[in-house]
Length: 176
Image (cartoon, rainbow, N blue to C red; front, side):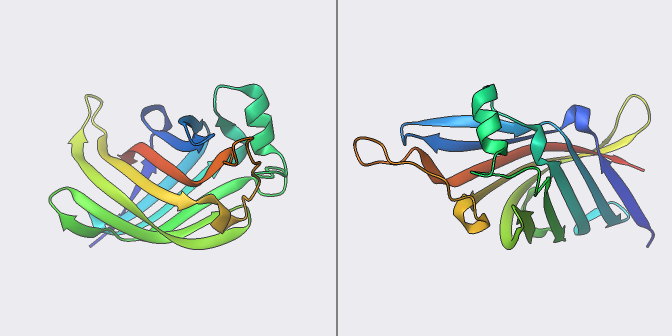
């Protein structure tokens, strides 16, 4: 079977994260610049070769001061580590439209295996004749696993930022 290449459609995709702040609320952020390519056998994504890259300097939380802190050596060190990369081979069916992908996440110069949950939204032809595939993605990672260790104690003995980061994405790919 022929290899099919799918390219992410950034105008119909978004990558977000949430992290607990002061352990009482969540702060939401996103990456504005990213690329992704998926290679499949025909339209079968179960054996897909997936590569996703985000430009870490494109991080935004809606607060310029916080964004500058996230880009600094306290967190992402964007000058030294400009990208985060996720690579996986295949999707394991969990039944229905639910899948799981296990792959390598490289962030802040550290590569670790992570599992992501994937919900397949389907494959359709748009009004312009392009074939598109959509997916909802979710994962939880521990930021300290990637050397993102900065934190501060609160007056009550808590911490400013949780270790767990929840990542979610809505992605749409265009068949090439």
